[in-house]
Length: 168
Image (tube, rainbow, N blue to C red; front, side):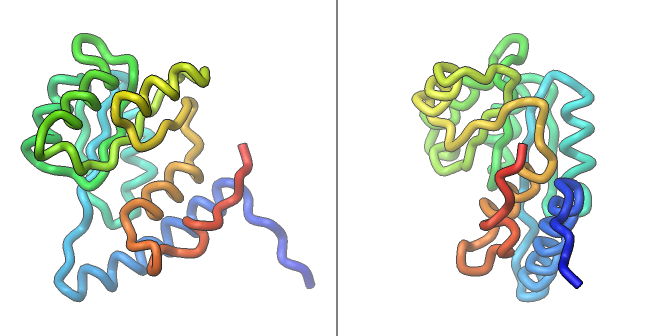
């Protein structure tokens, strides 16, 4: 009997399960759950990422605007910052730049999330200090693999997070 390939949802669930197993071991040895900051002015996007990351052993904090994201990032020092590019007031690119200029924020992993999907938009985000760029609509499996891969040491990251499919 041949194994059927996992659907995108099935692959995301497997990545989350693998990451939970790893994080459970990490925590049992005195580690703590990594903190993820997600900033987006769209409540549906905040809810989607919250739902996606809820089963993973990470702590998630949300911000509805750039100023709050900057304040939370500098105060709480998350392991990963997910920033929407287009937010009113202080946009995600500016938040990224401000974080990169600060001593505390210079080491954060920062990924931009945006409906803007041109190469020029992506290059601008990277030039201003982002580590990567995800386009909307957010692919659940891709984001789950990214979080697992970024927050785990490479030698211990679940194989699914490192070798995830390149679908969609």
